[in-house]
Image (cartoon, rainbow, N blue to C red; front, side, top):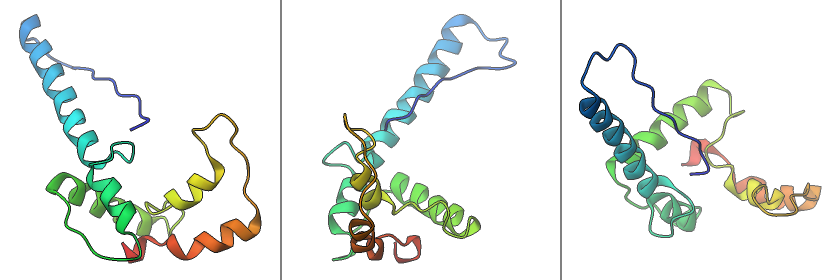
Length: 120
């Protein structure tokens, strides 16, 4: 997910083996979520949503649905400053590539109709 994750257990007077089990469980949840919503995994719900964007509605699993609903709420609260549908524009910049670059205004204008959390 291009995300750094750490787990810290506070106030845990548990034996070491129990703390380690809790840490493994936390990372197991993160792996399950990544499988559902990572745009880097071709079979994920996120990849399916991106492929169907603007063409058809699709069903997603409960993890993806919960995350997308929360993302829509955050998008609404921010007035669209945070927009979960921004991937087409991010692709133009090639943020994760070797040579990220600002796109032309024409390229941005061409993709803006595809970016709108309200249409998710």
